[in-house]
Every structure is written in structure tokens, then in C-alpha cells.
Image (cartoon, rainbow, N blue to C red; front, side, top):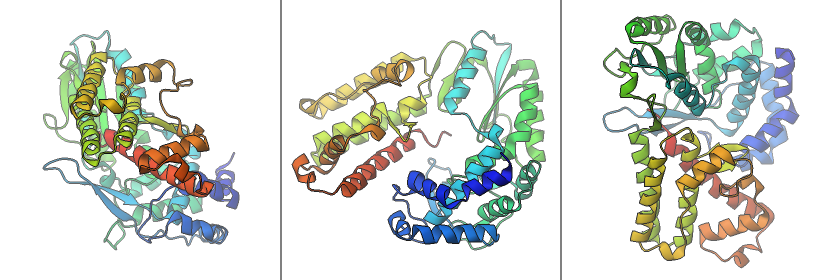
Length: 436
């Protein structure tokens, strides 16, 4: 299929409507324009016709993105996340689909894919080898627009696509009004694929020469210790040519012998053992405590148990897997999971909630994920919930009897159910981000 055909399909009324229904309609996210998806849906056909016309005429403009700041810890500047309005999210998703088709080789594998590959590679290596970690400074804010457009143009000269990409990456976030020539907004559906396209040339050349792994701005090389500093300088120079800079050796960038282990993508890696890194592990314990403590003082034991179980098992929604245990399913340290289970049991009993049921277990979840994901009943699949199960979940979350919900319309039940599920999934995503 040609780029023109792909673009035409993605920006057809039928496909835009499908994107809205699958990706946007159930979301409560509102951009800077204040338009809710439910309000947008009431005039959907008119809005889609306007979008298509403006895209074709190369007159589509994105509304400035709403700003959300995510704290990264004491002494660190917050991470800026850009939130698009409903109409812009629709267009951005269609652009993302086009770019993902044209640059199918730019797709970023899931973190556990890298971890699985790394642990197999290092298993039989000695201390003649080292990890070389490179941390790119201000990755998304430093991406050069001219360089990015050059990478896209090398594969396609489609005018509407290039226009839309340029308008998207130059749209300001928050209170800023001026367009910039540098930086790609984080948090948009287009952000990851654009950053991957930006890095493709560097990645391909590095992989041809080195055992090289990159996830967004975290780069890991595994090589002979004698070659470590030279390889660091090589990648640093490649980044510099693309307008990027990494931290100097001895700071966030470092050379570490294999036997001493290294933290990467939330894991602790060594030839003998792959485990969850201590900060990620501690964070999960804190999240568990916050759920149990909140339940104790709000006197909502059933709701607390439901939220705690989702925290432990994660969930499957829209055929995607969410949760801490899914992310860390490549761990080999079962003792860590056993300690978490003991911690949950102790805190649950300590707060006097044992009479209301037993929380699920991390070890059991791990085995279900590794060996029985397709058939498991232990991990909730919210897409498969019947209307009865949806009402039961709503009754627990709202403290109502199921009989009180039976008089609701199906539309209200669906809206309430997905409101709670989206909120829990958002919490699951926070459990594993930011990684660094």
C-alpha cells in the first residue's frame, strides 16, 4: 500500500469515526479548549468533515496543548506532559497510524523485550565485559525539528503528512505562545514514534557495530571493558551530530563491570540474577500502603480490596496489559515477590481488614502471566465483563447495592464502569513511570 493510500484511509470519515470510538470516546480527558468527548460526539459528523477539509487544504492548526507537570523527585525539574484536545487527539492518532505504517521498523519494543534479550546475552559473560550506560540530557525537549523532518523526508515526501507533523511539534504547551524549532511534546500519541524515527539512523548504525539497546533516552551497551570508553565516545559523537548530548562518564553515564550489576528500565541486571531494582520495589510497597491506609480511614473494605487486587494483578483492557507485575514479568527473583506477598498480608491484617477477604498474590500473578496469560481468570479482563459484573464492580466502588444500579440505563452503567476502570488503569501506569 502506498503512503497516499494509507493517508487516505486514515483520514477517511469511517476510520476517524473508528478512532474516536476506540481511543477517545470512553476517555474523560479534556484539552485546553475544555471540550469533553461526549460533547464532541454530539456533532461528530460535522467535526470529522471539518477535520478532513482542513487537513486536505493544509490549513489544520492544533490548539495549544494543556500542560501537566509530573514530579520526578527532590531536586529534579518536573517532566512536562502535553495534553491535546479531543479533535487534535483524533488527528494525532491518525498521523501516528500513518507514520507507524511508513516507518514500521521504528516501533519501540516493550521494555521486557530488551530485558529478556539482555539477560540471555550476559548470562555466560565474565568481568572482561562491562555495561556502558548513556543517559541523554533532556531528550524530548532537545529533538531538533529540522533533523526530524529530514529523517521523515528521506522516506516520504507526502505534503499533508509533513505539514501535520510540523504543526504538531511546533504547537506550544501551557501558557507559551511562540512556536519553537526544537523539542517534541511528550504525552501525545505521536511522541514515541517521532522520537523513534529521530533515532533510527543512530540506532541502526550502533546495532550493526555493538550490542546496543535503547529505550527512549536510556542507552545500554554491553562490550569488553577495554573497549567501553571508546564505545561511549562513539555513541556520544553520534548523538551530538543529531543535536543531542549525553551526561558525562562518571555522572548519569557510567561504565559498570557485569558482576556489579546495573539498573536499567526498572530492573537490576547481572549475569546471575535479574530482579526488580530497589527503587521500583520500594515504590510498589509505598503504593500498597497508600491503598490499605486509605481504605482503613475511609471504612470501605470491599472497595479497598478491589483496588488492592488490581494493584497486585494488573489487568487486561483493550487487549493491552497494564500493571506493575506485567512490566516486571521478566524478573528471576521470586523471593522479592514472596516478600511483597508477606508485606501485603501483614499490612492487611494489621489494619483489621482480614475479615473482609484475602488479597491476591504477586507470586500467583507472576506464574499466571508467565505460563497462563491466555486462559487466566486470576487477572481481570475488563473487556470481557458482562453487564452483571460491571454492575457488581460499580456497586463496590460506589458503596451501593447492585439492586440500586439495575434501574440505571445501560449507557450510564457503561459510562460509570469505564470511568472507574480508566482511573484504576491510570494508577497502574503511574506505578511504573517515570522509569528514571
